[in-house]
Image (cartoon, rainbow, N blue to C red; front, side):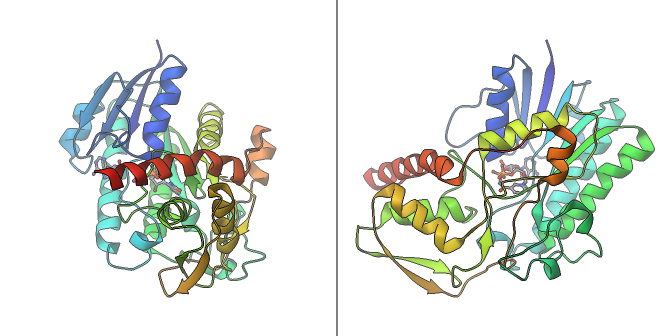
Length: 323
Ligand code: NAD
């Protein structure tokens, strides 16, 4: 039986990855500070603990796994990463996790390890035009990420690639672009735009109003979690280290995103634009490299993904209101 370790298995993408690997027949060990919040873990073994602690890392990485997925990070949406209030924690915590996990993997002769970097590594100067942002993989230098979260991701990418060169480890580094879906943060201050709008729209009365940070003309693309998992496992099982973008190329403005959720909810609401943390002006995933090397392309539309995500968040809103 194949074995996998999923670090960050209590979080959004990690908990979905555990389910995916179980469906494929893997024996899975999950590791996280916390158990998944919205469904019981499907991991065969779940170790609750802190990957900033090197002893805990060696305890959970006590053997050779066929595949290791490293999703654990101190992260959140714009309200968490772009205010500046959490920068020291974000950099310290995530760098510690990556340093410890990689070293524990090296000691146990683990070879294949996936690292989830982020589109936030790309330089701000290439993402000022909301209609024409650039995120081709080789445009990451000269580096100028717009957040310390992005700088830590860039450091850790380099760390994984250095272990690849110096210790012969088969690392796989991907840059995720806004992944969304059910069973992710939706009201804890770490939620990202799709979950935040689903929540606001589910809470609002038809004909009412929702708030939006900025003018809503900033652009992004969003990838449904199932597609992200598919793209990730195909990449992990390839013979290519990356870094590579994993995201959708369906770029929309934040106004269009909110309108799409309103259509799905069957509500028409007015939007009140207010100041708030925003990030870059425009961003879209450039999938040319992924498609060229792996011959696979993402195809689930934003609307289809939201049609699954909105009802899940609406149910969360209702169940909280009933408590
Ligand atoms: P998440 O916050 O839901 O999951 C991260 C998990 O890591 C959490 O469950 C958290 O408890 C755990 N964790 C944090 N510190 C830990 C520690 N010290 N020890 C053990 N566990 C710890 O985030 P997610 O959306 O599932 O993202 C997974 C990964 O993908 C992260 O590395 C993130 O930076 C990256 N990423 C995500 C997106 C996205 O849109 N969701 C985009 C780009 C990159």
